[in-house]
Length: 486
Image (tube, rainbow, N blue to C red; front, side, top):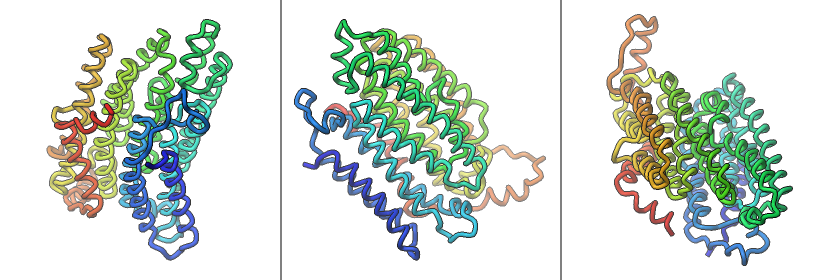
């Protein structure tokens, strides 16, 4: 059996190795580094199936006091590895756009660092899902956040990218301050930072429950920033639109998944306090309503997916209110598949026409393969039956029905209807485009929008795998559910 911490160490060593090769092997094709990273992460992913579990808390000592290798942690380590592999494949397609951000440099300038940074982010995400101590949560979260600082503002010649990086930096620093302040309050009230020992401390009548509750409110503010929950979502649309598209995909999937696992672990000791559940209930309602209503008028696909990300955080928060870990975990897997599929198609199409929904007009004629893949991604995000997105919502609503959360069910069902409207706008553009005769650039746009779009073999395989998995998981979810049950 492999010791669980060796997985993160292997990913960190791989990232440093790629940085060293990039620095000292000047004549190497930098795209090779992306393939090395993908192969390395695939090996680590294979090794994750042979990881030994951590001892139970009464027998834990040393490292195991703040690091867990339980079923949930191992599953989401694999989740982080799979996400990073697909993001690296997207980065290979994004290389031509990246080249324009380094004026006067070689054709592959910056690509090595662009490939290495997601590896450090991946290691941070893997640490984060294993963290069972507030101190370790803070350290892991900062490793992830600092890596995202650089990735978001990487294409520094783009003013939108610099604006996105600055907003993420300022607001993330503010959320970190709330996190540290909340941890201080909790430690002062209970004398503990270990999440499992907090349960015992809060059960002690001598513990100041009010001070601990104030501390968890500050911690929820920080985690609300990471998962894009209302009212901490203000950064999401501008950062998603301005960041390089593969980074946006990574931020949308990887950061959100790790944030929800940390949220579940942090809330577990506090769920016996009725104020905690009421607070999460209100945040879930506001997130559902705001995310779906704000997505309705969007014409830029990246901004639409940004508001969509807020809406999906609302559905996931329903699972958190009901504290159904399996429903949340399954929804996150479904969200991984359909979101990465949508962004993979967006990266390829945007280089030809743009990121507006109107730029997808007639995509079915230019590339039936990409149009069909985007169709699957959109209908799954909307929650159409026989897709992973439908079953994800089904399990979330089933958990709400079991807990008799009537208000959440009613609002959730209504907002699903809103989702059908704005997701189907993209499908309409691809298959039934509306031409604007008054467009002064109609001739140029017509030529661009009839040009065939070529897809590389690697991207074709990745997109096909994501599309197949989205349908397969919507019909046969047992493999994921069985893994989560063990």
